[in-house]
Length: 369
Image (cartoon, rainbow, N blue to C red; front, side, top):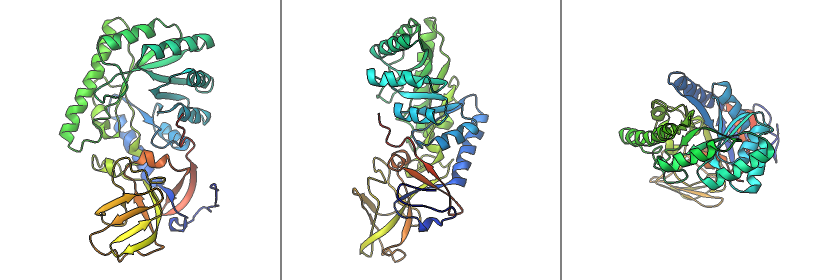
């Protein structure tokens, strides 16, 4: 097995890896996938696993083998990678806009059996309709509904109905369903409040379905949910699939929200400086451990008083002297945000009993287009 700059023999002890390295505990990963599959078996909805968290075809196939009906991708580039690696059922949970990207989307239909895309504007629908008609392809679309997050999506009522009518008049477009993401709910720590706001979001999505069906247009799939709301949205009547992604890894942010899944992902780092007894510096920063939200934690230690992330350094401040750590020692750091951290790496070092058993390429990392 090789990485871009070193050969790692099977059986290598994880502390013998160079740093920074992205570590993935295989047993915990498999348990998390199995736990979600068990939940899905007991509710009337399916799992469409969101691959933006892992960006790795190997993991996508593991999720599908465990029962996921397909995957979500947030970017067209991610979908292209997944399709070229044999994933056939893909929902792009984003708007694909402009001639360049739409041409790529139409070309993708020749590789994957079933590609769908989100829409929320008349102009985009007209562009997709024209391109699919010119190619002779049938393209599935999901109307994205703004369920309270205030990002993309149309509102229930007339805006959703008028967009559905336009799609219905387009011979090469097929309205597959609706999608909505209650991203404003997924990180609410208090479960009662999280459930209340999630139910409000779910009800907006189902209201949009009812509005469209009253106009005589059938709506099949209702897709929603994330890891923080999987056990709320997954039980909500009328939701047909959930789009959870981070559950396979977890991070320090999600661990404050729910304990249903365990943390399988960490970044191996080295102490490169100890300027004071209560302060250490690691060789990881925002280029390997993204700090967009959530506070990272050194797995082997109590939480730090403060963590500062620079480009290539992280500074960890503690209340008392850190006698257990010296320069040259290695630690595992649990990320505050698993998805953004994964995107900065090229490979997972897959561990079992603290030994490297495989290296998986993160093929869709940084596929931002």
